[in-house]
Image 1: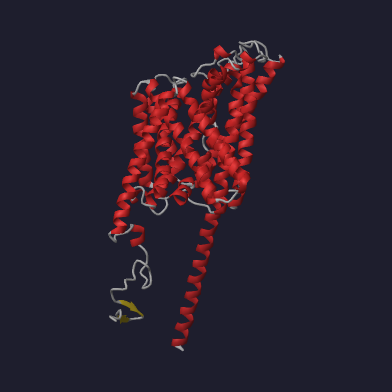
Image 2: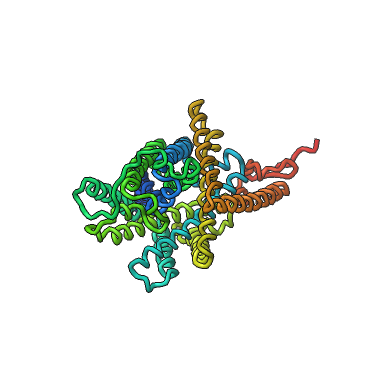
Length: 505
């Protein structure tokens, strides 16, 4: 009887343990589902990661270069961006990868392409984030001029790292809120601009005038429009972040829908707002230090506009910087896992927090901020232009990778070539303007250095594999008597406790 009781007790404890395990596994499954995204959430995050200082501030430089015809550049850039994201979404729908475009480049063209794509993206984003932190510091000093720039830069950078540190849930919530704020600011601009044009608000600084001649539309000719093309593409920079986050979709096949809705929204918003700006402000008034939307709303009855849009610029810059931090953290984790970066950076504290990877990114941000503060303004503009060009080089890799990995027929091939031509036009347009020309050559230099490093890494990896050492990921495979790395015909092997020797005959 005692034995029977003990057996029953054991069975009940086993049942309790099993139920606990099932409940814990269900809880884990629920937690995982919470980290998943619906397609519309991905679209909203894409808007948050795209609308930034490249649009609110960089569009002023594009307008001053290309004139009102810059609208053509923005529409063509939207078409090019859609083609790139469509190719990336097709690969994601077929096989989601944590490393996104970097993993696809590796599958399509080998390890050197994967190394180059990942590190080109990493360096370009770090440089761009450095310039974003510098811009955020300038905007913040509009209200607090006594505070040094490095203090604001450090504060914004630390806040962004904290948001990314605590994972997907906090990041999603923050970016969703910031996306709504940015879209509300754009809608407010459209409403106020329409009220000024209609005469409902008086005291406008400039007299509205619709361009009606060739010289009014193309004040610098076609070369001016060509030079502005790169800045139109900058306004759509961020689809790489969307591609990396596509891995978290509940239904990966809905990635193309998310990108299509996001890009149509951006194209309409950009077209309307920039169209109003070039109608309401004379070309000579546009300058790189003022948002064209603040200039368009200059009125004695709208004295709050500079303060309001300064806050919007801070929100926009911080939002895109945080999205870039998220993407860079994901990329360094993938590079480390696959041996293209020290494996330490793939280790997560408590299996959750990427402490080492974020530590590396923090060091990179500090270096980028110091560079931004110490280098002369023109030199740093050249470097950030180079970083933007490096993003476009990655877009080209996305198109080329999709050509190898996805069978899309003749129409897909035509779309890819159109995308490559549009990217080539934007890159080559930098040669026609003194501000962006040095950035082109700096970008080639940086890509060459990364390519040389990638070649060295691949050569060392091939040497290790040739000598039998192999990759550490291979060495960590579980022991199995028939595993290709374990089975050696010239040595004895064990099967079910019996040692067998290769026949000598």
